[in-house]
Amino acid sequence: MIILARVDDRLIHGQIVQGWLKSISIDAILVISDEAAKDPSWQLLMGIAVPPNIEFKVDSAEHASLSILNGEYDEKKLLLLADSPSVFLYLLKKGVVLDSLNVGGMHYAAGKKKILFNIYADEQDISDLTGIADMGVKIDNRLLPNDEKIDAAFFIKKYAGGSNEKN
Image 1 (cartoon, rainbow, N blue to C red):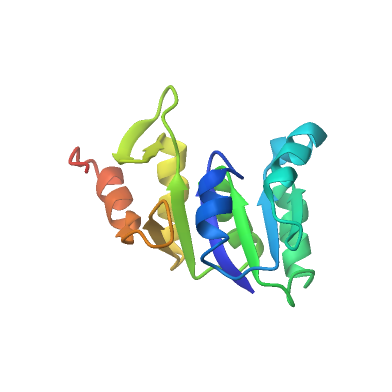
Image 2 (image 1 turned 45 degrees about the vertical axis):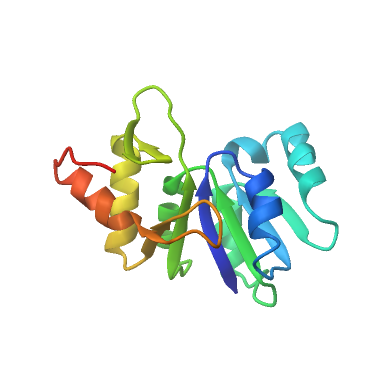
């Protein structure tokens, strides 16, 4: 059961460990990143931050989708964490079911424009997030679980429609 699906380009960090893990009940974290899946040092560093009672795995998008669809996590309360919305669009297209997606942090990088205070996106990100919303997934923006949920899909679609109004 997917308890939380979150886009956060920092992956495992203090807000995840100190904020989310203390507020949601999970058994496992699945970090989905093709880049991190190839880097044992990065995996080790992230794993150090995860409490020992929580199963932790880093996998590629392809392998993660197969694991989820083959029932590997059916008996687990799962946190899915990826660094890009493209990962979640890929999972949805493969058949993984998501009710909602939390966009917690997509930070500034060259070519990205501000959508919300902590969401910077390029055209591909906008397209991916719009595709996710069009598949019926609710997209919210909040850094921590007790923060007010902001309907990020509204702002993303507004931006994609050509409006320059952003909060």
